[in-house]
Length: 430
Image (tube, rainbow, N blue to C red; front, side):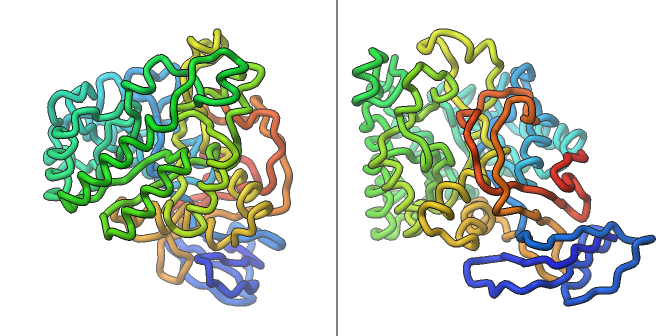
């Protein structure tokens, strides 16, 4: 049994905060009440005084690199990194080697996750075979095996007719299509956002239209097919406007953005910091503000990490040779508190919705909720703690965080999944 004392529970935006105790028996919340009697001999007692207790987080977009790229990350190490950041459900993208483009590969991911992961790992199947953008993958078989969505993330499905057919199939199988929106005719060879910083650094720029053109195309295809399109890692103000327009048209469209896009700009690249090389690239302050407003208004539905681990040898090279991507599990929550709650007047309940309610709804799952009789999936967070992101403290195999050296506010102290303590008082136990 686990007894959490003096908990301030935040399930949603409208919660009335009051101190209560939470008793966890086996994998469920047995009782929520004031002054539950302690029994130190039979209970693990956790004092949550001055902290908040909220449902654990869900990430609908990450890369675990297994199979094929285990030198960067694997299912076990990636899951531990996710747990350290408060995530107990993560959806891994199919750009592995071999890719997750058939039912056998979906089954493999699920088997490996059951074998080594302390949390729930849900596979995303590929849209096209081998992610080549030429022929549809086994969408129905993958769904039957447990794929919760389809995506060619890392690559854009440039063939509009193929994307239309993928949407039609996805509608029949009731799963979303997660779209990586990048017109490769415009982005080919690009390194960073096309603009001021690309001009002064001499690095080839990627025009913002490379994203928004495909966002517009996929919205129109979703409108015609009445399928669910999910636009991932939104980075430009134009994309926000297009998604807003689509929702006004009642298109079945959802969207996410990532912590680095709502907090950092293209100026992170000054000095040729390869950890700031991500895809899509970091944009301008105007884009940051538009994304934050999009989150506030509900145009962008949720936050994903796009956790993209790379070995140091793939980052410690010339900028144009460096791999794109940043890890994100362990900093995501703290970045949202630092840049949304502290600086932009978001409520802590809104963060719960961005990291729990909304992403789970997108993939057809019920939200985690702290309530008697529900599964004990929760985190205890200290909203006042300040900490510096240091390489030595990163759990992930890879250390390529764009937030290295930055001071963040708030910290995930304790993580409980299905009644098991994965992290306690900042120490990972899984």
